[in-house]
Length: 319
Image (cartoon, rainbow, N blue to C red; front, side, top):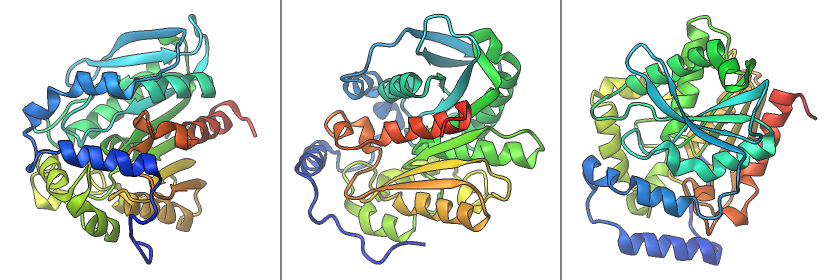
């Protein structure tokens, strides 16, 4: 696990400016979950700057064994029929954020990949600790296999994607489906995914202590809200780096070079390769955690285009 050097040298000016501004606004201690959630909607408005127009955007509800879950649906045509479906799980440390927080990249994926994106408002900790988010992921996937046609989707062409904590949900959901003998999704895309709850990889030790976005104290606080029992941190569904990936579907993994979670993604990609699985790893040097979400950084990379191309290959059969 890890690479030889972990530095923030020679960053692009836009990245350096964002880091400095974020540090200037950062609280000296992790904010309580309740306080963080008050920023969800204002944050979503900021992240969605420059979002493209899309033909269909609506709220739907997915029945689960717990409670119905709200979800946002995005489609590139007003009346979809038989389009592949991409089930999305948002980031937010398992404790905050909303489907609205990632509406811009989800609209881009829906348009560029020619798919329906369904972004799930899954249950959050500490009210709903591990494994509630994974239970929701599995329930939503199974619901989609039964009801995709009702929203204009194809139940035989479903992918799962997620970033940060949502990437953990996406990976763990897939691992649990395989373990329980279900047909897995056609493809999985993980972006800056949180896949190892011990939070002690080389990249985490190098970048975490003073990271402007997900510093060590904050990440440990979120983790303890989600998985308060230390024994849970190595559970394959809480930390998918420990999961059985021998039958994992094709995967696209995005990592940022100065993200504390860099090694989470690289290690998972290496594990998939060692198991002979189809995996592509896109390493963006000098980029922060969930860099494509920030309007000032998104134009610097082709991240969403790469994810959309991956989804077209595995959902539409394009080469």
